[in-house]
Image (cartoon, rainbow, N blue to C red; front, side, top):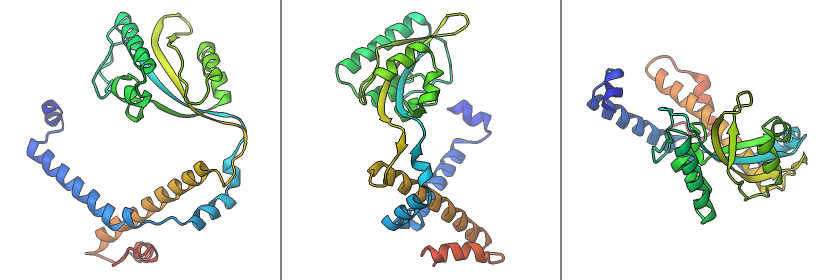
Length: 239
């Protein structure tokens, strides 16, 4: 930590001041903007009716998560336990330990956050998002065959990941099928559809309002930015 501060040429006091400032800004934004955003049922319904095509899946999709362990030393791996296998023997022992804990009832996402060595997914519980069936067809045959046999909520046995060319072991994974979405039109009555739309509309509105809010603050001592002020006014956030 101290070395990172030196690399960035800032002192500990500078870091603390910047942290306090960031937290203050976040609190202000939450008070002035985020907490006041209201997405109505009519907003959600209107969006669905105008964008039905977005909810028509042309192929089945698999919502997957994984716990991944690699025998390759990698200083960039950061899970909550800062736990990293350094060779194949350690990797095999580690993935077996995690598989045993899953069999004992431990939560998959928690184990992924604590121990998974996939830098892109360990922080969100190993969540890989939705994978179209066509993409699954292009993965290695072992993983594909196992995943397509899983039922939602089930997880796989340990899968050995090999380099296709050299057949060298490059990792081990346990994959969980969170959900499977069949091809076809997803109806508005599906709560997941409504929640996805609501989240998307909230995120869009929040980004627009934050940009307008910053614009008004920046220009408050200069020339009025009437467009930004109008955005805030129409959203009920202008003072």
